[in-house]
Length: 24
Image (tube, rainbow, N blue to C red):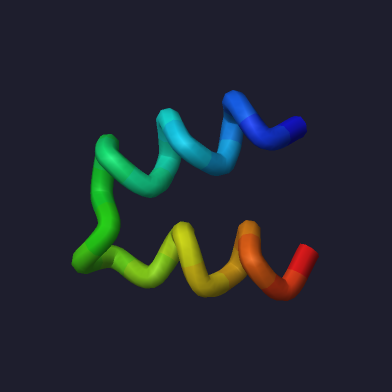
């Protein structure tokens, strides 16, 4: 689960995916 967050974070951090993942 944490790996997916990291990947999403560095993939498009300006998109707000990291925010969604953090809430998840």
